Image 1 (cartoon, rainbow, N blue to C red):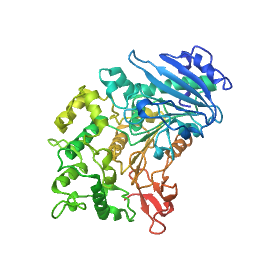
Image 2 (spheres, helix red, strand yellow):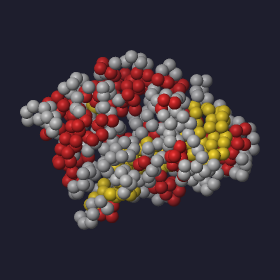
Image 3 (cartoon, rainbow, N blue to C red):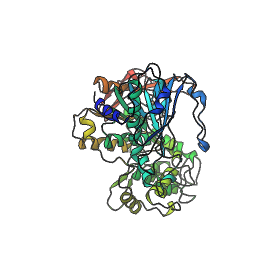
Image 4 (cartoon, rainbow, N blue to C red):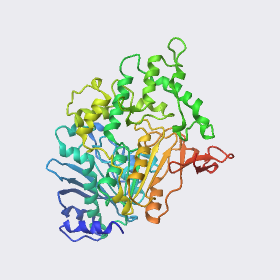
Length: 517
């Protein structure tokens, strides 16, 4: 087992002999670990977990946890540096532990433990620690060292930034494995990481910086490379909110979307409202231009110029070098996520204000794509990015990386995952079958959208890691609001796509086969 040596190497930092599984949960509070203070060790009866209030960030409804099994709840504070204050929790099943360990990632700027999140795509239902516990895992999560909704925590605190960037997840993983081994009397048989968005970035960082932490890693819609991602977000916002004429009202998104479908829907052999491979769709928004005065069913010349930037790529205008890929055709109905105004996306603004430039008063109107991206690259020094696609150590020790991304992602341009995947294949010296990417037609950011967006990649990853069976396809479904499944479709490992066999319902996965275009 590739993790046993690591966990047993950790155990000597404990000051007491590992306890048996039958010991009370509360005994764990007396464990002594390096730069770790266990603040809570509490048995929680089935259905009795009540999440703590998150202040002005709201409270998760207790009803969401009523079906949780009994577990031992461990809370701890980690201080790997004098300025660190990393909060983490570890939940240990008291019955029916599957022998495995799963760390779940965060979203945005983190600042909260992921008790439950909306990552439906990555779990077939609500994710977070709750989802992992329901499936029998011992599970952990961290707030990454702060409790801010944004990035103000990083201003003047370089150690806290390092915690957010990569150290908190790793330290949480190491501490959790030691506690778990002490409680159950043995290390986990397999260890996994699962995350989407920021969690996807965390996943790639783990594979890159700490290749021995996990056997299998699930990376969805990775926010990577973050500096360039946020430069693209500000650049688009700058175009949209330059003046009242450049602004495209949300009521017109459907006009562009219908024009895209009219041109490209049938390219994949079925007219189903989805683009199986948007890279084949070459769409010019000028086809929606008003013939006369502005109206509700067309775009003005100024709005066309804005749309051209949104559907284009952020490139250095002097060298042509790609800074970040843009939205793909088919994503139009979700543009409002990043472009709701009156300012560019706040997550991106926080990056430039508090992390990169260290100036809370920085004005996005002064942003210059080439100048400020180059400056940001020098300042970031790869701290909050996972740009290195060389994952040789992770792959050579038998690690498996399963990536996924929705083609209609309205938050992180999906081609970013395609680009990283391609580079990882050429940059990693390892057996050929260690990484796979699944691109999802019609799915938005980490879930939602018009396409099949509910699937179980963890089951596929488990089969790959534990039984050597690499996923050749994963069946996904789309549900109506009442929960009724109205479409299923196979997801295919990139660059393969789902191809219609020529007969059968286009809403039935059995009518499709994975193949090349």
